[in-house]
Amino acid sequence: MSGPHRTPDKINTIGIVVVGICGSVLVYVSIVALQAFYMDDSSEIQTIQDYGGQDATFKSIRADQLKNLKSYAPHPAPQPKEGEPSPPQRYMIAIDDAIPLVVQGAKQDPSNLVPAIGPATTPSVLPIFGRPRPLQAQG
Image: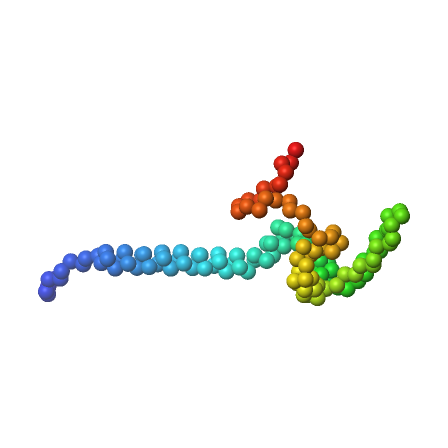
């Protein structure tokens, strides 16, 4: 073996460490991304399997309530008490039409917001700041 003398090979430790760290970070990120993709892709199916359409009752009740809020109809006539005249017929109107009527009635007489009950002229709580306290202690 003739020729110039070679220097011994050295292991590039820093390069190996950098490549190892970058590789492990890349593997970790790709595993997390695949799990996120799978969860997003299967979450609706899993929800249906877990709950099996339990919200159907809620949706039907909600639809009925919205229909009642937006409809017009007569209320069933209340039965008159013996010896009293029959009460007037009442009607149900849409809430969007009822709100301005309530505001108009409150401007005229704020104590009579519920005409079927009558004016609210008797206080029920002490007129002091803070939590309402009844006028008379409940026994």
